[in-house]
Image 1 (cartoon, helix red, strand yellow):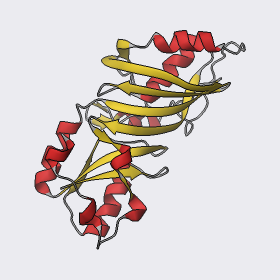
Image 2 (cartoon, one colour):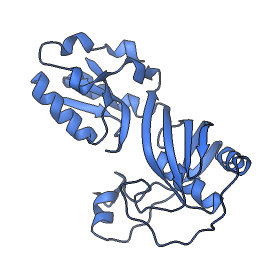
Image 3 (cartoon, one colour):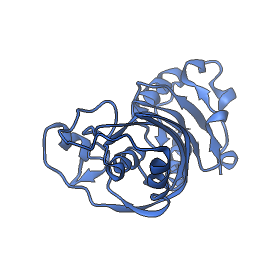
Image 4 (cartoon, one colour):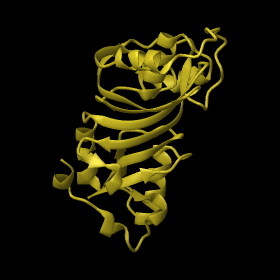
Amino acid sequence: MFLLIDKPKGLTSFEVVASLRKIIGEKKIGHSGTLDPLATGLLIVGVGKDSTKKLSSFLKEDKEYEALIVLGEERDTDDVLGQRRNIVFKSEIPSEEELLVALNSFLGKIKQVPPLFSAIKISGKKAYDLARVGKEISLKPREVVIYSIKLLDYRYPEVFIYCKVSSGAYIRSLARDLGRVLKTGAYVKELRRLAIGKCKVSEAVGLDEISSSNWKSFTKKYSDLC
């Protein structure tokens, strides 16, 4: 059985799973595709041994997001939760035309360096654990695909976009790299995952709506999700 959860802001994906374990009374629960604490949106949760074994199949699916990006500076986490990097950028405000050109330059197959504060493992340790204690780390660029980027709104310094990306793509990295192309710096302020493959956040349920008596009514079969 699977649950499509609309993850609230401020919780880690692990904390969502921990809450569901208490509600459902099932220890074997997992999720497919971590969302950062600041992010909201679709989280696919597997309930029971058979379902958790199938979660890895969703990792390769394409993802859709809406993101609010702030121009003007970089943060060490590439999002609003991080510390400002001491980098001097140009002071000119990019025009909408310049912004569109920069956004479109990321379309297709690109090489992307993941954020230093990510769950990628280096010698068996997660990058964010090493970064938090001040270790100097270097992550290798990897090939991802940006299928679509749409500019939904632009009111400097805020840029609101929709994008569809391949598995492995980081929106925080996309924001960081956008800021470097524009020579302004940039980071993610808000992020919402709209879809994983054919699963949509419009089908998801809020964590606060689930109880021990009604959770089964929200479950879906694996065949419904693929």
